[in-house]
Length: 217
Image 1 (tube, rainbow, N blue to C red):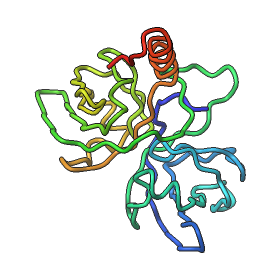
Image 2 (cartoon, helix red, strand yellow):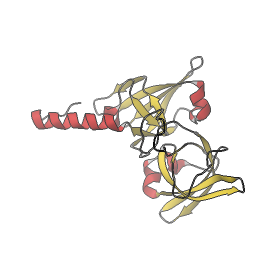
Image 3 (cartoon, rainbow, N blue to C red):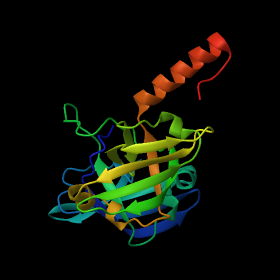
Image 4 (tube, helix red, strand yellow):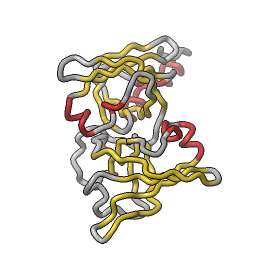
């Protein structure tokens, strides 16, 4: 489980192709890997990955390896990572930890595209185009996880087929702690829908379909 509060930016320092998967080495920011163990979960651009090896010195770990299977490479943006790519990282939440964002599983639902970037003073506005049917679960003032960051939807438009777009407004601190400041129009990002919202929408649609033979649009 994760909270959607990005704890730092890691850099891809090595990639290795293996049968059926790709292995990444991520170099972490100072202090991020303190106490990190093999087998631990780390959200990498919102995708839950397992630590397979640790690298460091007598002062502790500073980098880790992750194996990513082919399906994950296909369904997320991780397949596009290269040496030097920067990614958002968050360690799994501990029991009793403060949930500053919202509860995330690290299971990516869809990939969206940054279609518009605006920069009013002290703000950074990102508009993401979302494939159908995932906009059915997006509501103004609701939560959305974008590359592992818990963000509030400021505005949105839903098309009849369940596609559409939503916008988020980012403050300077969010830009400092994440890779969003690196993104240009056309960039692709991982989305994880807020699960409680998804359950409510699917339940209502199922009840309406059973009762009236229609599905809410």
